[in-house]
Length: 173
Length: 188
Image (cartoon, rainbow over all chains, first blue to last red; front, side, top):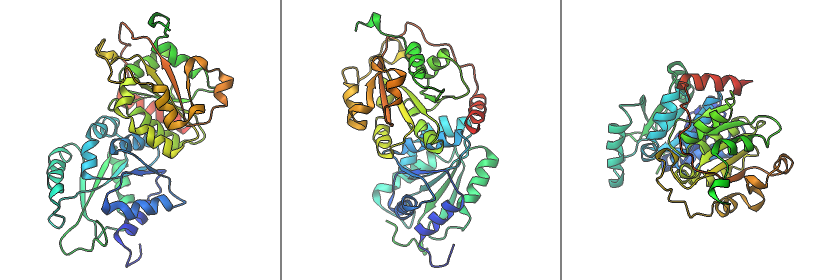
């Protein structure tokens, strides 16, 4: 990834580098640029879902066929999807990658996000592996590395992206 | 048609699968639909979904997307599809050329034996046509293999079925068995 790229462009480049057969999601402000780039890409197939739980279903269908799938959503969306994550992704051991914006961080103090973050910590972390990242300083090989981990572990992996104090999160909402 | 004249879920699934010239991938919802799909005939191309009721249509869309040259049939009950009605909007938007939905409507949550679905008065044919168009939402009893071959996808088949007096036999497969068998079928 080149220097000076926006966080959304960096995330898109990392997703593209993993060569997924399917990318799906429901937008969050912090994901909007990456999703737009995925939708515009001729190399990726992006399917916009009406609801986050559907995304888990789509990724499961692709992974059942042995293909890589990436899901993007906000933490509240993953909370909507926990049953699907547990009974499909975890039960069948499907190595797809979830990119989740973990809103409600210290640098992201919208009042309506605080409980989402608390519920994410209480409800998601005990059942699924979460790796946390600064949305403004993503590693170049983030998504390919996440697939390598998920495929070795034979289960989904969650990349939780958050705004951090002093970091460049660009124009993310 | 009186309830006594309605086909069983198992027979409706078998009839729908027989519309295809070659066995499609069949993705069935948890419980009733997976049990009756297996009873209708186990095949490595059957994907028995263990996830929340209604997720089969979404799983089928993911599968159809990564296997664009294969036909995929999602098998959902009325109670199940009501839980993931938004998936119809997603499928209509994605326009997969190889995905169809078989909706088995018996007006009850079959595993409860009697609890009625909130959609029991719903006109599912109109719902399907609102999402996919009149030519792409048809009833099972009006379809023949020849007619089905000419129906554009995504499409929806509505089958009124009789509630069963008993549950289907358990799948008898572990998640690992289901995944491995299906993976082999999907990779060939």
